[in-house]
Amino acid sequence: MVSTVSHSKPNPFVGSYTFPGSAGGPMSGVYLSILPNATYTVAYFGGIDVGTWSINPETGNLEMQHVNNRYENFYVYGRKNTSLANGTIRLEFDGKSPKTLVSFDNQKGAAPQMRPIFNQNFNCAKYPDSYSVIVSSRDVVKVHVAIPMGELNNEAPQETVQPMIDIVDYSFDTVGQYNDYVIDYNDQTEKPTAKTIGIFKGKVLYLDGKPVSKRRDTSQIDLKELTEFASEAIKPIPQTKEVILEYGVYNTYHLLEGVAKESKQTNRNTQKSLLNSTCNE
Image (tube, rainbow, N blue to C red; front, side, top):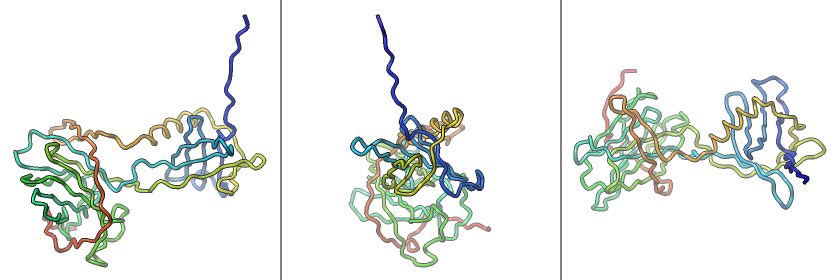
């Protein structure tokens, strides 16, 4: 009896590449690694981008898609907290975005009034400082959360230029579900990009018509570490979040599905803040 073992042929694109202009050393280089598990990384000084790749069955071209499963400005997690006083809602957040706006919809159907968490001259909110807002939950059926565009990227506060600011209002149903919320701010808000097309011309990889470099083997150490990193990075946003709030005990919050309204304008300066404090810095 004769047995045969079939070995799949490795994909010719799998390997490492160096982008032009990277001869100045690691601090100025940009390095592409196409990994066997259908992910890729682009490493540069100060960061690393991750995506997935596939082979177009009709053309044989490499198709690369940048992946960022966390491109919203923030996420909201909730839980049912029996230790809160009856008829109250708590929002827990940090100092990453002191310009956060919130609102509470009542059953009478009144239009939500977006209110800042902090007053305008509150300038000492710092990450990872933690803050809480506790409000009455009477008749509350929705919680609205919004962050003025650009403020997570440390841009100048927009009200110094114009009092009317652009926001995207995310609403979260609360009836019979949760009374305790955590706002999870996101520093990486880059939207998914179009696919990048790769082909070989001779032995040189071209991406979207521009030459990159010849392929070289990826070291075993880099292969292991980059594969683990990419596999973790492409996972979707976690459905639960563990937060330490009370006496060092972890509390489990669940990701809420928000409904986004169109970008609109609101006048933050006319609304009374939920927290009122003056900083001396």
